[in-house]
Image 1 (cartoon, protein in one colour):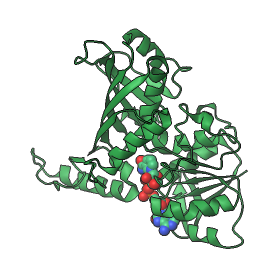
Image 2 (cartoon, rainbow, N blue to C red):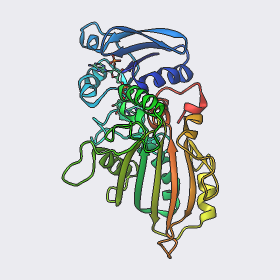
Image 3 (cartoon, rainbow, N blue to C red):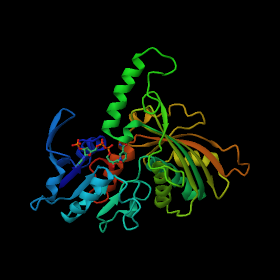
Length: 343
Ligand SMILES: NC(=O)c1ccc[n+]([C@@H]2O[C@H](COP(=O)([O-])OP(=O)(O)OC[C@H]3O[C@@H](n4cnc5c(N)ncnc54)[C@H](OP(=O)(O)O)[C@@H]3O)[C@@H](O)[C@H]2O)c1
């Protein structure tokens, strides 16, 4: 088996290398990034080639390609990988809205990936934990609306943003100031900022539109009312999301807790019982990287008909929200040796 990873030197690419070794030990690995280089990871050195070499006539064929590039470069390389015979999982936004391309959150709609499928789009890192938590509840009570408020880690913006954030945090917190005055008011360190890139005439940013569109596509509820407000918080890894969710029927809170706690009904989920959310935090997802963490479950006090609940969902954006999902998608084509990574 020959596996290719594009963007191998980036945050998601590095995680993918480690997961691929768990899922398909012994597979031949071909790594690509912007230029020829060597990558040191987990005490090993990997040769990395310039992705432009894939355009050459003698570029090797292979079985599965994981693409962890920005939209522009995905658009450039995905068609070439398909031409070379790879089955492709693309982690960018490029193909998510394409009706011909399945958008798959493993454990929610993995059935969309069969032998006839050559290209799958990986959802956004906030959509995956949301879909994992809500699909089992939708199956019983039928969703009628979702409101989401997200608190997203800086690593979601890539390796350069994360490294800049770590440096600025170190420098800012080194200065004794109780107001946070040493920090840049527009930057991530010591701060909470709107995730407002790509805000259009609707008033929603591109991150917010992704969460809204993708949850409808994955849950196959094209008309579902969904609204989101997204922020970036001064956290390295781990996206935290507060959700307000309504259903067609009144819900039984014990049954909801039982559904969220059932590995069969709710795969790749860890449920924290109790309304207080003890143990649930952005960083707790970095200790449990391949599951969505769910808790703070309680009735929404605004709804006397008991059709609405509040809950919190957390996921490691680099793993559950990106690399792990992609590997689980590919496990539908090539079964994984590691059962945790099989969907
Ligand atoms: N970070 C997350 O939490 C997350 C979650 C879900 C989805 N995603 C998506 O996954 C993709 C990768 O994100 P990331 O956070 O891993 O980004 P990143 O850390 O910034 O890494 C970007 C990768 O792209 C490579 N690259 C840059 N320019 C290139 C070029 N001209 N040709 C070929 N390769 C090039 C870089 O290689 P060099 O090292 O050589 O520059 C690096 O390997 C993005 O589409 C992102 O939206 C990210």
